[in-house]
Length: 150
View 1: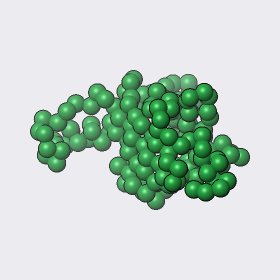
View 2: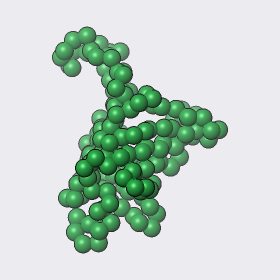
View 3: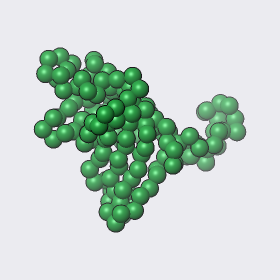
């Protein structure tokens, strides 16, 4: 990143620890897809790359210490309890969005796709939120609050 792009990115640059991840439904319901106390880290680098990892810390350990030998239900729980991707990012100050241009993701359908997040800064916190997401037959939006750690 250079020049004006770097100026826009400056508030993002650094490491951010996940404070909360809450899904909001259209009828006012809430859901915690990664549990009540999710863990996560998102990093925005000045070179224009970003990386995000989010986890449900209560996912049970596998019976075997070899990750390739997990039982199907263990693998399913691990997959459902983790979000991980990286790629480049761009910022629109006009729309107050940061777009993650996904290059690699645990969820293969995101590879080559853009993940757009609305952003808001408040003190040492960054809130990222999605637009409307369809999960099953319901409309949801996700709100993730991050706290700067570096």
